[in-house]
Image (cartoon, rainbow, N blue to C red; front, side, top):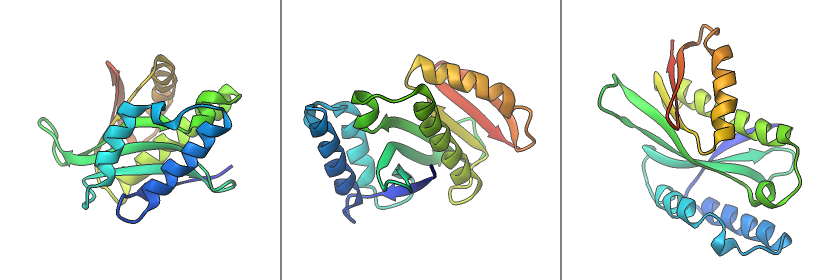
Length: 173
């Protein structure tokens, strides 16, 4: 299974297409899409309306199925206390099939790992950032990144990897 990170915008129809696909997924489980993560969608809807690259929604598309397995907002901005722009990943939302379907923990971990890896790739390339802040939405994500962070600290590309509160702080070398 391979994944790509795709920018989703309101003006090109890509965001509406994702929402329609996820509405269908909710229907397959007899769930109401309008009640599926309304707070996250309100924030993501706003991000897809931005015309510049400072605030964008990215979808993690499964290249085998063509389905989006997750979305998140990516804010690329200057923050007090940092030199240069910081890449912040927030509002991570998995596809409805992960909430309502039967998946192995390894499937969830694969998607989480791929979102993280694509965010690091953005910071190294298209959104140059020495600092990455990744918002952790659940205790499982916190545990996952605490374990992963101890390994990432050993790689020369990562200067520091720390968890503070609900945030993963990464400083690239």
